[in-house]
Amino acid sequence: MVSIIILSYNTKSLLRECLTAIFSTLRSFSFEVIVFDNASKDDSVHMVKTEFPRVIVKTSDENLGFAKGINLASCSAKGEYLLFLNSDAVLLDNKLKEMIVKLEVDKKIAVIGGNLLSDDNTTSAPYGSFYNLAEVFRLLFYGKKSRPALKQDFSSVDWVSGGYMLIRNEVFVKSGGFDVGFFMYIEDMELCYRLKKDGYSVYYFMDARARHVGQGSSNRTFAIVNIYRGLLFFYKKHKARWQFFVVQLLLFTKAIVGIFGGIVTGNKYLRETYFQALKVVV
Image 1 (cartoon, one colour):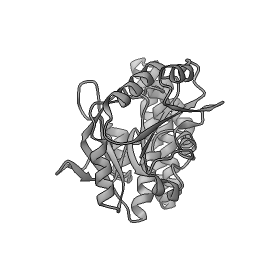
Image 2: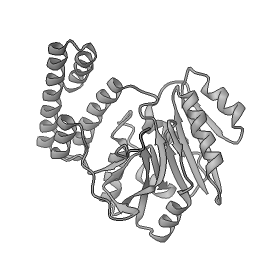
Image 3: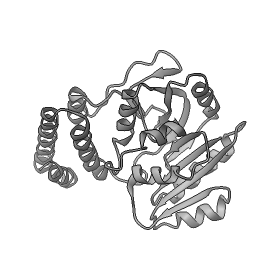
Image 4: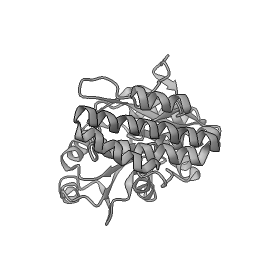
């Protein structure tokens, strides 16, 4: 059985679409759906309980973030496999069975990620290379992640997005789950980083597609600030001290450039966003 775990935070309409797609699309295997609500104010919980009585609902009195919310929800999961799915993701096909078979055949694979598509049907970078220094520089100053070329439907990659991630329940528990030092963003990459260090493989399956709105429960400022926090936490935890300081410098430089650009162009959003990001670094 697969336990599908969805974190919800003020995404009532998107969550309804997500759940509708799950029950109308998935066939030929047993699954349960667990929604963990992070103190939503938009009546999401009532909607789920009323319209989707099969769904198990867990609630929190405060917003615990992605990592901690998923970890808590997974504690009650009965499935051999866990599927983490964003509330703003809508399944477009029934490829989950193929992902399960792949995990059953190769016990060294711990995680398989699905393909998250933007509204224009382009892939929204749901996989990538680990954030080494060159990768951080590329992300900050070019706005792009490097992604390994895919040679087949199932491709070995460094990490996949937690927005559409299938993982063995046993492996997730053994790993300690997502590190709750990450509130949101970077935690998926860090989990895959630890799993690979333990000898497991991470795969991406491009044929398993879901339409992804993106930042359904957040905004761009929130994302940038928490990516800053996540990168610093990752480097402090896993990398040499000198590399941590280099990342600090890169983040500081990007924030200064963003603030200056906002002042010159009169872009209040840009100026205020990177001022908040700067406070994370200093």
